[in-house]
Image 1 (cartoon, rainbow, N blue to C red):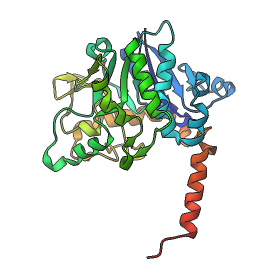
Image 2 (image 1 turned 60 degrees about the vertical axis):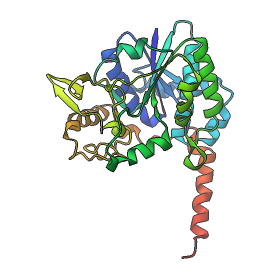
Image 3 (image 1 turned 180 degrees about the vertical axis):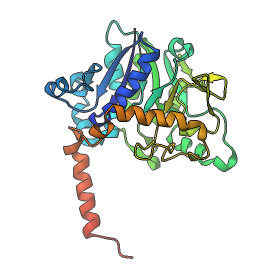
Image 4 (image 1 turned 120 degrees about the vertical axis):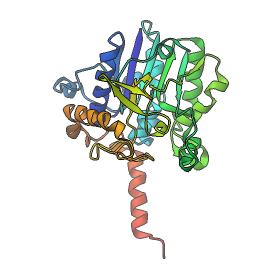
Amino acid sequence: MTLFFTVVTSNYLPFAVSLLDSAKSYHPEFEFCICLADYLSSEEIDVNNLMKKYPILQLHELGVEEFDFITQNYNPMQLANCSKVLFAKHFLNQKHIDQVIFCDSDTYFFGKLPSSTINGGEIVITPHFTHPPDVNMKRQELEILNAGLYNGGFFKLKKSSETDQYITWLRERSVKECIYDFKRGFYGEQLWLNLVPLYFKNVFIENNTGINVAYWNLHERKISNIDGQFFVNETTPLCFFHYSGWNYNNPSEISTWALFTAKMRPDLKQILEKYYITLKQNEYELYINKPNYYTSKNNTQKKSFFKNLKSRFFKAKV
């Protein structure tokens, strides 16, 4: 059995449901679960239709030793990112689950996963891109050299002894140091992925251009609609688009970080419109400002408070 999951905080539940709905339409054979790096009471879930659509597994239910540290010291993004490996470990410990597939919540499926992803390798990761951009877009390469060759927003892990070793290795390095500090070589859990093909044997690097299409690889991937189906470069079926950096309040633009504008890439108009409509239907506006149970009162807020206080009373002299 393949279990497909995503990790979100409560305000991103519309993203999670949109993702799982889209993936389930192409892969009804998978089991699906929303993993919550947050806390919801059973009463709150019971009266909310969106929350009842898929099984929800909450972080506190894992009983992991890192729980106190990560809930007391991380912001919502860090909390969600560091807990991916914890949820993956939990699922792979279940007898009926043979493998897990993870997707960031801000992705949406337009087709089936290729068989190479589902059946290939015990550890499957995707590179940000596989062809160099023009030299005038070398900023894209520089960003990836900082952020990592592989994207942490998608992976597959198949139950095996090597996968257990991989999870232990990544957990030890990234769960309690899921920070973003380029100067010290940290970018969440993602930079560690650079080492995965070196350390582990049964790793499959999925280079299918229909997988994980996003702002970072648009220089090599163009979308077309042929008889109602989306293709990449007119040959490869589009599997899923990763809307990293996309803004609901400015839905026609691709991403905050994209080198391409919407005017430069009219081929993306349909999939941007589709995503906006889907999130609106799934009550994005109702959820987006919902505070995280843990991070609304943890050490990150205290540090932020004192940092603001210091900047207010001890402004640097010009």
